[in-house]
Image (cartoon, rainbow, N blue to C red; front, top):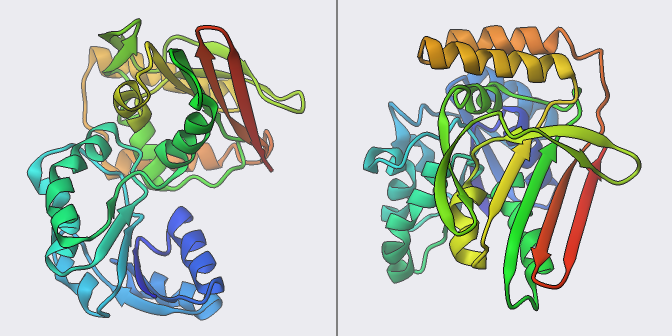
Length: 301
């Protein structure tokens, strides 16, 4: 297949491009910097493609791809304009998927579902750890349950895990805000990076997780008919968790936009701490039924 990976030289895009090439696909590494795309393709193979999806999105279609994968981020909002790239792919009869972890964006792409079905095209949002992997695990655990009381998920990466600017922007942009949460069959509002809980993973790994907004919170209540859905995330270093809580307090008192310059500064600060902690992290998915509790932990090194 011919596949264009937008943001293909980023943290997740580059790994994805490498795996697709390994599987025998023709891959175009696309992004605003032709130089960075060329540097990566010189190492892993594939073709560089200069594309600014906000200014010249049509260039994504130059290679006549079968699939376009958007790995840029941060994905924002569910306004009609947010879905320009998937609409463009739909009009050109090209399949589309993205790595969005934004609740509004991923849940909102359903506005294109009818059009995609009529054309027989695939438009998939959230093909990442959440809600892609988390939903697969939850679906397996929920199998056979007549009543699901709780789906409780936590993702807890190691401090040395790769983190791109888009991931940092997504997390930092939520600090100080309120998120809708589904508890006891009722939608409520709760402050991001609160509701701390110690989460035990396999192999003696225990971390603290905090409430954060992801697509799972919006999608799982209806899909799984669960009474409550909880999602937490947490950093390995307590210092970073404390910094995020402090940032949340500042943004509540003094609301400000998280600019690209702010994200770069925070990324630099986080990278200064890379020598501490480990590269061990994991995801925990727990499903509580009326008569039984099932839990799965996935550890990554």
